[in-house]
Image (cartoon, rainbow, N blue to C red; front, side, top):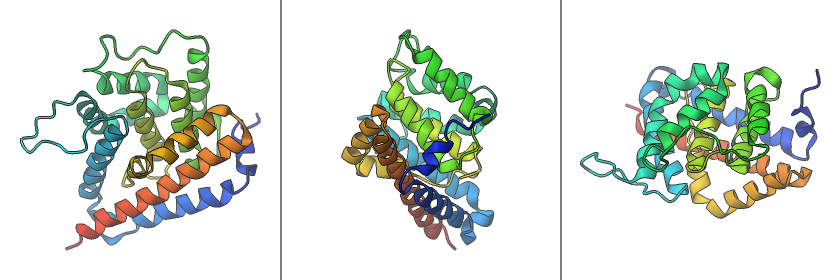
Length: 241
């Protein structure tokens, strides 16, 4: 069967951006600290990613000194981050179940009925198509599938709340499951926060479905992956004995 995402590799600049993103993430896995001490750096990356993802959606970036997180967006984002490792097998086998669980975790304090997609025409069908891609329906490189998963969930907004936290978490799961970032060391969410206007602009471009819009989004996502790798290198450098 024809790979539905293969034509995206013909878009201008996309193959080069994908290769650069993949190389940047690979190189940070070769950092001396990450060869053996990656569990520590991955834990730090997870917290940074959760804080940045929450802040993109209007939550605070700082965790209170007493550890009691009361902001519902940040609390949800932290719950999601903690559960990603457990959810990975479900994401690989039954991604729609994983998305429902992600939303339950992200929106527990925001939505009276979390985990249920909106009953809007087209949502279920597009989620099914996305699930097909995640479970082997495409063989495109990891950075490209990450961009599609992230962009499609943001454009679709399948839930009534917390779609941003869910989409960015699904992108992290895709990075892990495709082998792009198997140890989840990168923190691409930080660039989404730092360049929020560019993030929103690229998402809007993707939602148009035009080749130019999709190109803009994929290139931005590849930039976030490279930036996330730099953030990961900083974490590893700080952990170097």
